[in-house]
Image 1 (cartoon, each protein chain N blue to C red):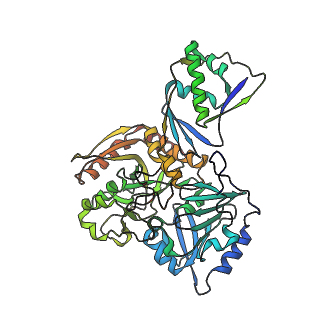
Image 2 (tube, helix red, strand yellow):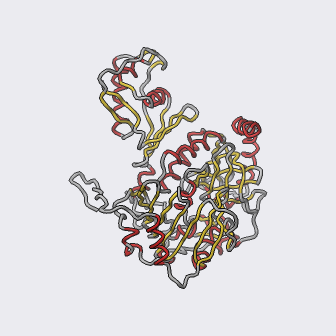
Image 3 (cartoon, helix red, strand yellow):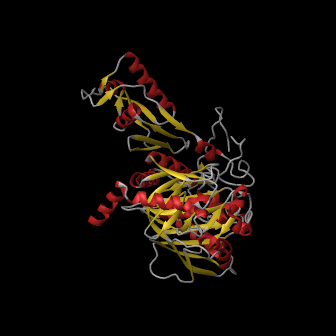
Length: 137
Length: 375
């Protein structure tokens, strides 16, 4: 069974007034999650399988299961979570999340440009660091 | 640096370990010019007392213009929490024993860093200075090639990487924020460059509100947050200087190498109420508009976090869970507001006064006050 967990060495996260905020230290990208996505993220803090995660929703259909899988894939692609194999993980019988709705996250990439910029050549002549030229990648 | 077939940078392993504290001290004192007689001073980082040993040239031409309000020259009193030595050592890349790791470290914006045990090395690529700090030995060193090599932003906000390092392991945090208010309560101004932090802070000069900072503050994030002034400089985009006609002639252009916004060194200016510290009653996110009037509204803690945490963490080296936790605690505990900054600057301090009044009634501040009373 595949277990999903937060990439704790590269990521910090917290819950602020119902909104999960996440930052990836290496890429500089940061994320916001609300509703179902926030609930899923908080469960990932304890390491959990897809099956166990799905079973915790009051109601989830086949399409929802696929959306959940796709969401976890996206988080993994962003480097926010990792996976590991666990042979005999138990599936929790607790139902402690609401009705499933499509989980999404908002991604902010403005700091990535700052991190990767050349502080000498990519900054505005007049404003200097950390103000990047409009055409700086 | 070598690149692999996938286009990723390949970091070469270090062939020898970085120098120890003893080796660094030996190199530092051996190469320090004999004619440069060191003088001692006290740097006050909120509650953290740092004993600084450096030359009169560095004090006068680099530190005092921006750090004059928190640096007492020739005092060196009491028992400091940290010792900081700063010297001009010539071309650092020639000092192989100190800088041989540069190119192998973790690149992070302006900085490249490595951590060896509990000690930290940071190289600043634009100004080409090297900083080392050892939290357990309570010692830090800054080695510069020369003052002419410093980027302009290092004149406006000197040694912020080292200050960030000295605050590690304490409740203090250097943050990317301005600050205005009164000794019994003020606001932090949050947002990326160009959002209006400096315009808002400078608009309060000459009002009933004191000025602490336009770009960087130190904040004690424990219990009830308290902000401390650090740099008394202010920077404006050239196209905004006309909004501050009375100060126009005092903005200096490009004091250092490389470009930067014109800077005003406010410790030369007496006509403002200087604010050394204040309890943080509100977090304010300025947004410049083309309207004449200014207005404000409440906003979420997550909005305040987005305006503060990423830009702080990406501008400083070696930020991780600790910095994240301190900033998140600040944004959780203090009410946040959006300030829509109009062209009539006289409206800005009035809006901030209104925000302060509103924030003092906020459940968040009342909760903190109760915790503070019971403690």
